[in-house]
Length: 452
Image (cartoon, rainbow, N blue to C red; front, side, top):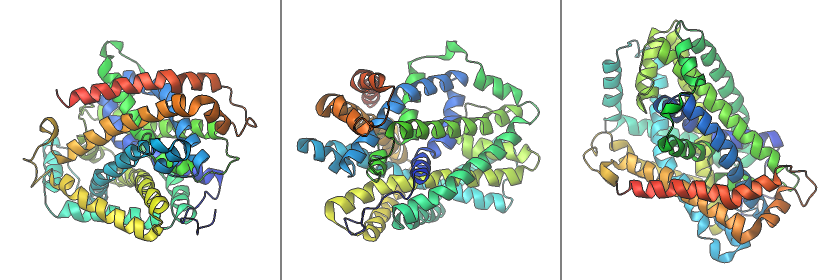
């Protein structure tokens, strides 16, 4: 497509699209959340639950979003409107979710840059958890330094998105994704060969079903949406840049596979090392910024592998942040005919400003609470991840399954019957019944959580 047409681009190659979409999926949800959720929710039990939901629900919604995006050749709002004018509102849920996530995601991205700098300076040479916890708390509690790193992360994201689809996002993804997996595999090899790592491997590979419960299912399904960028408008946006010959069903399988591989490798990079060195696997969000520096401090060549690991985490975070911003940029460019550069700079600056109270929530604004006593950072995260993402995915499944119709969606998915799709009947049942029921249940649980 010509750049003159609302400055819309297109993917230069199939591999470029797959790597970019996988890059959107592979982010902090994989390398930060997945390992600590695995540690919190019973190891192998959580992993098995996650994989089942990834297959049953993740693939279904992934294909639905790709179909909607390519059929309309527009972002989320335009995609719904192209089929049913009075459904345009549905596209806003995903755009709002992805943009809100970007505002605090970039704060965490700034923390990662800080830890790379600190690692290069040799500042993390202690394995004492209290000391490491103090280092982390003191840093995020400061009013100015975290904002500087927050700004640096936003600027990196802006630079890539301003380059457009082929020149920015696709080119960056072709570098970031292979580098990400190479670094991750190197860290995994180091982690699983540590003395005592077998206990961590057993924890991840032998399910203890006594730990299974509805809380595991809820956590796993929310993680599926967050890590696959579902319900964010991102996949619809990326799908809108696809040509009509692309095999959508194959792509809808390949992207979750790459995402699951990154999530599992991240867990293998973290948990065996945590067990080997005697730390707590259920340390929660602090696993990345408190426990892991202690792990690297006790590990042979720990400084090298520590810096390497945080560089990997940064690559993953950037590959996702560019997609989070791109969804909003595409909407503004498509709807208001604003130039990509201007839209990117304006939305990036706004995301930085909204992210300021999220950063200060760990310090100066710490006493200010919102949802159920949560600070601004956690409240925005809850609204985006636990409410808007499942709401967006629920509306999508209803729209595809009951408003537009699975027959028309499958026509698009199979390129008007020219591509074989052996799972068509299963997908139709999932998008009409299984996915709405599962997602609706999670949404109800999340809404009830507002009043708990």
